[in-house]
Length: 201
Image (tube, rainbow, N blue to C red):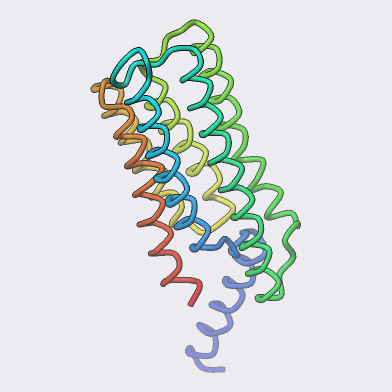
């Protein structure tokens, strides 16, 4: 057997091992749509806040509740779209949607996300709104990096970007809304587009 045959066999074994340990059917299109949902939701929230009774970009109780509802709606739409498109892609590739790899992916993604979500709820209950956007970006970035071990490795680059944006946002909390728009809106669209053309076509 020639060296080329050995290298080919090793490459195939490596590919099979990687495929068995990673969930690779994530849809790039779902990332694009998540970014679009975030931009639409941000535009609606901005309009509501800017036209609130208390003035430009000042949140009272009712306005805050509406903005929180918009955030929840964005999250539900993004998750629902992601599940639908990823399931569709997995079926097309002949892969199981719920196996050990996808379970590890979900668990490792949710741990930092849930911890971050609980911490954000605690500081919101204390009416400390200033760093909410920064914390969302940072914990979301940590969740992506943590989950990247069990999926497409490129996810970690989005995670690092979100963390960097979150840290800069923490230095400039008055621009939190705009950093949120960049991180959850534009970065999702850019990342999703790259993943779509790299893996989905």
